[in-house]
Image (cartoon, rainbow, N blue to C red; front, side, top):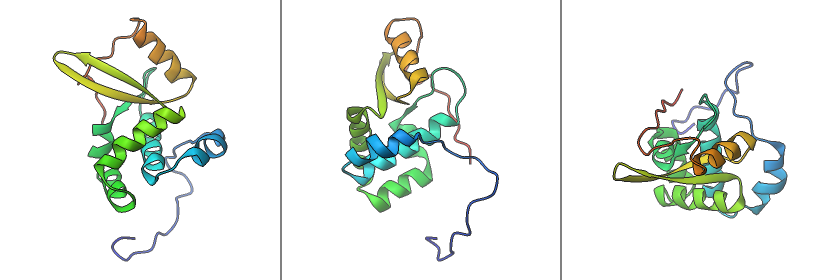
Length: 142
């Protein structure tokens, strides 16, 4: 594609990222920048590869993926667009943000706004679920 080779199509069976239909009718029409869409798509992909009740990622984890960084560079204005896109998705209600603090660190983690994530965020805010900065173990899958 970028090397002049045409995309040959999707495999019959493979990994997929599920995007709720309401995203297309309620969220996508309200998005204003390419970075908004890219931020949501990359967060959705990364959290769906995780296991457990609290599925979330940081902006740094998104940016660390070479394909994510290259799409933000090609279609928007790079790293700044990721930050603005995440903020826009939180404002639109597509993503939930939770600020974590501890051990002299602070970071924001992002969840896709669905029932399981809303419960996890409520538990974390209520003290029933402990989430700490830097304690996120995420290995992206190819």
